[in-house]
Image 1 (cartoon, rainbow, N blue to C red):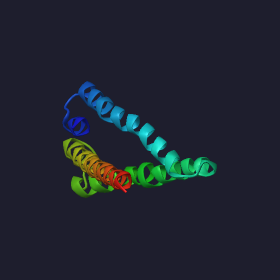
Image 2: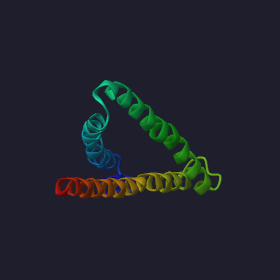
Image 3: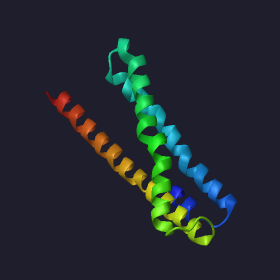
Image 4: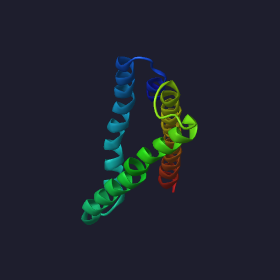
Length: 125
């Protein structure tokens, strides 16, 4: 909600506050991902697993996101290079990109539920 709030904010201060409150939980969540990743692989492969994880995060996140924002904004802006129309196009692009977090939350919830079910089945056997 905070990242979407940043997209709709009218002032620079509100934008940065919403951005901070939206990004902080995302970075805090990375710790549990690292622990889960290290527990899922043999001890001798942990360094390689962390390296592949960092590579995948950058390949699937950092690299395409900038291009996607530009492509979405350009397709919405109808040729405007500045002004309110371009600002509105960037807002739409940020909303589209921020909505990917909804998919992430759903996938994390699904994986949590599945892992709980598997753990329960293993305990009952």
